[in-house]
Image (cartoon, rainbow, N blue to C red):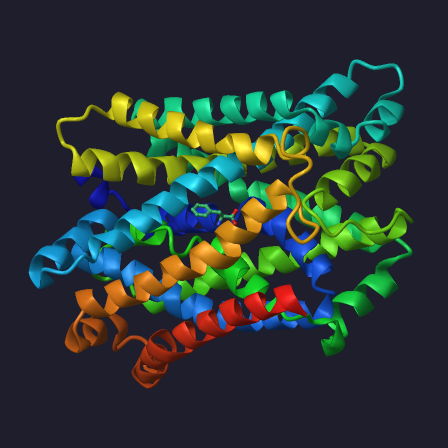
Amino acid sequence: MGGRRSSFKNRFSFYLLAIGSACGLGNLWRFPYIVGENGGGAFLLLYVFLALTIGLALLISELMIGRYTGTSILAVTRHISTQTKKKYYIFGWFSLFISAVTLSYYSVISGWVLHYLTQFIMSLFQSDSEFYLKSISVNVLLQNSWLQFMLASVHLLVAAVIVVKGFGEGVEKRISSLLPLFGMLVVVLLVGSLSLDSTHSVLRFLFYPDFSKLSWSSLGHAVGHVFFTLSLGFGTMVTFGSYLKSEDHLPTIGWRVTLVDTLISIISVLLIFPIAFSSGKQIATDPSLVFDVLPSFLSSIKGGILFGLIFFLFLWLAALNASIGLLETVTANLTEKRPDMKRPLAASLSVISILMMTVFPAFSGTIFKNIKILGRSVIEIFDSILINIMLPMAVLGMVIIFFKTLSESDRKKLFINDEFPTSVAMYSHWVFFVKWCVPVVIILGLLMLFVGIFV
Ligand code: PHE
């Protein structure tokens, strides 16, 4: 790890990496369906508000923990534990555990992306490519658990080889540098999608907030997704922060990363919903949304198959990038804890345990088909418990770690910068947000989720 700490020769590559970690399946796949599930405009407004307030405040704090300590989350919590003789390292382990579980779930969805990528490639060899693509359904995939498991394993193995070979960061940088290209592709698709007849009703659905559509669980869903999409609570941003140089101004960096991530989420709902609305089918409000609507739309427009192929390739690369980051976090923390353990062994152990967990989401449609809690399938329960409940709890731990690690003067030194006069005024707001608003909003969100189960 030591060699990686000072490796940001320019700030731009840091932005690419941090934005590369933040932007992934969370923006393009998860966000559209939770906006659909929570009724559209009012939820979108709530989400943007929370991202720009508690999300941003926390992102700055996580980067600051890393920048100040120069290490990863497990080492930070171990250090506080020895100093205070209290068991703070539990928070570090909890974050690491969440990274591993998230990676298992993320790999299954990345496997879906891989499946669509191969279908687009195969359609090139069919006499009627459009018919071929229209006939693939996400349901077929959902009922073929072994295929899902295999695709997830392939995805994880690719990530593991990159991490073991030690060129994780190099690959992450290279993939991240492709992101602007991906962004351009998404914008081109957006123009096509917004020219559909359904645009008027979509704009109304997304930007005319109807607060009666919010449910008891909406706050918890928005909070969980803000953390997931900004990669907060996992320790990833702590590690990234440890790579930064002293002259980098953390609030500015945090602000830019949050802004880009939020914009990409908004673009992705603007891209998906016109297609979903004009497809005439009932809009899916579950994980199948993007996979249901995009392929058939792409196959029916001119040059769409090539677009689709490139789109799913980029989407998979973005997912791979995030997965490398997560696996790297788990592996690096393991080797830091057990220096006698070689990297390949640490990575293999991580992959094996992660693969064991992928069984739950992968076999959700078959072996676990009959397990339904409140009408939700195993994969949806997995998603809910992980992102809406466990992640906010990990973030609460992060807030405690933050205040235990940095004193008032340390925080001031890293936040206030003469070049940015507003930083003086913003300082107390930021501390107030992290100390009070974040815990209150998290606890309220969790309580409301709980109440939502009974009403
Ligand atoms: N933020 C990523 C996304 O939205 C997910 C992720 C979480 C990636 C944690 C890395 C670490 O897809």
